[in-house]
Length: 158
Image 1: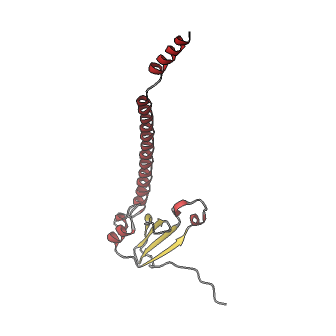
Image 2: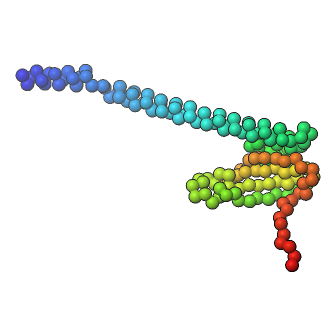
Image 3: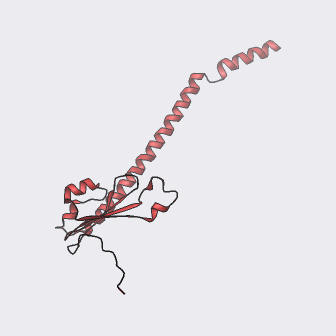
């Protein structure tokens, strides 16, 4: 009787369990499946982001007159690309947005707004982050009455 159980145990061990290679192959297949799912999710996010930028750029281009030099500016362009297209601005102004003070705004995204003023032409608005992250175009406005610098309200004289 004990030999019977011993032989049964031997057969189960030999043929009934997965081999180490099969387990390893199953783990690798599962890891590859997870990696493919992550890649698919990343590509979907990138496509959604590109779609949002294209919609914002279409809205920007629709708001500008056909003969405007600001039609060369597109949403998402860097400061260097804008300077190459329009030249150096008359003046620049940067301000912190409310996002700078959000405790969980990791990386400071969207925390600095920079405006480039072009006298007699208009302005370009950039949105960026603190810590040297490159600013990107958010908006542009064609305004022939642009004075070329930020107007601040001054207190009235008493």
